[in-house]
Amino acid sequence: MKKPLSAEELLYRLGLVLLPVLFFAAVFVALSGNAVFGWIPACWVYERTGLYCPGCGATRAVAELARLHLLESFCYHPFVPYTALIYVLFLLWETLRRRFSALRPFPIFPCIVAGIVLLVLQCVWKNAAVLNGWNPFFVL
Ligand SMILES: [Zn+2]
Picture 1: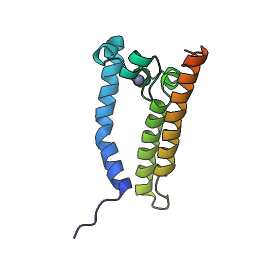
Picture 2: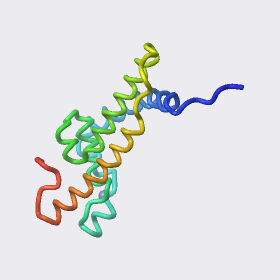
Picture 3: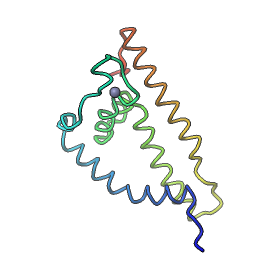
Picture 4: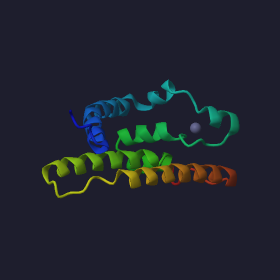
């Protein structure tokens, strides 16, 4: 009987399959300019409450990341460049691990926990900034 794939192996294969898809999607978004914002509806939570939901700013962050504007992407939604960084590091690490078996598996769980903490903190920050009259997007 065939041994089931480990979580790392499954994620690695999925990451490799998604790599060209994400690359061409990023090129498409980068070349489409600000038109991409017209294709996605405005945030339901923000429109009704004036407060930011955990996903607010992610579209702009993805567009800025696709244009390789890392600071702008981070300011709009730090979770987006963080996730992209972890994705690239994971693929590199697991590729090296397949060549040099002395490497331990990539620490996925701590990265997921850190991502969730970052997601919550950026949402708290943005809403605290709005309520206090500060700029929720730092330097932008
Ligand atoms: Zn939102």
